[in-house]
Length: 366
Ligand code: F6R
Image (cartoon, rainbow, N blue to C red; front, side, top):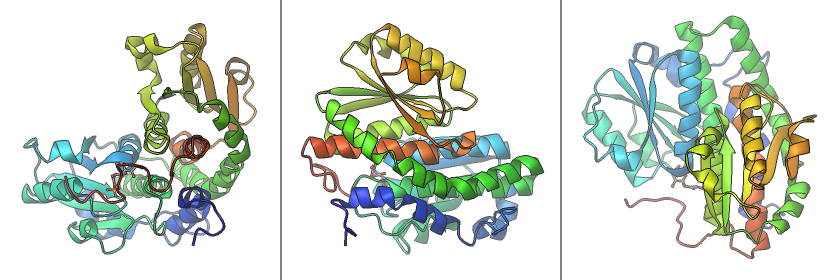
């Protein structure tokens, strides 16, 4: 059932290109000129006149929500808040019938996310679910939604569900933006075209597997890791750190790179591995200077860069090249090597990657 792979997690990481093809099937036309999420068309009026979106989720799904915020705000010009479901539900939040709540959950059974939905619905909000598990509790308690269609996720650490969630959020932002006319036709076509090439680029990102497996051995000594990114890569840094914590039991923190100088940079010494997502996009020069700050304190930089990078490759201790895509879709590529890094470090340390200690696949109690 593991299809020849030693663990479900590795199988699910490798499956991602096909999962994303499945996720997009029937939603993007073959010419790559249009995106249609039927839930949006069915509830167009409600969604177009929303004053605010609130995304509620936990864990990895919450990280996907942060990317969703960036996408929806950029292209639809609607304010978006991203909330931990467990905090939202106990805060007596200000919410009414002008709000749309997007609940993101792989399992569709997370207790806090379900409770957040119930609260928001009682306040009159319209609820949109983004789930994987068909027929689970969350999709049944929403007004509408979109499944991510990535197939059952067995490994406890979420991998393909995350990229599926981000893909649905990108399609949601594009569909809404087109209907709201907040995106130019050129920009729309450019992103849809890039979205269609993501599965092939993911295949290339997966080819870093052997390189990452060999690096992993070097870092089993570490008790701490820092993950840095900016813009769309900041949630990827959080997600990379969460993966490492969950399965290798190494403490890791994800940070927006520029926040380092406000405190955490004190942690940097020659022992500290610092993973930096530094692909070629609008934040490149900024992240480059953040890497220089880390190197000035002798941190060990593991940089994930775009193919052909000649600047960061000279600065970083280890440099891994990834295919380039448009900035807003970059998380779909950069997340993959971070999943692999966590996986290989955990395997080197002899940990049970599919069943990490203290964790359950569905958190059905609060
Ligand atoms: C991380 C992980 C958890 C889940 C979280 C939410 O690898 O698996 O953080 O993302 O428990 O679960 P769902 O998405 O099922 O609501």
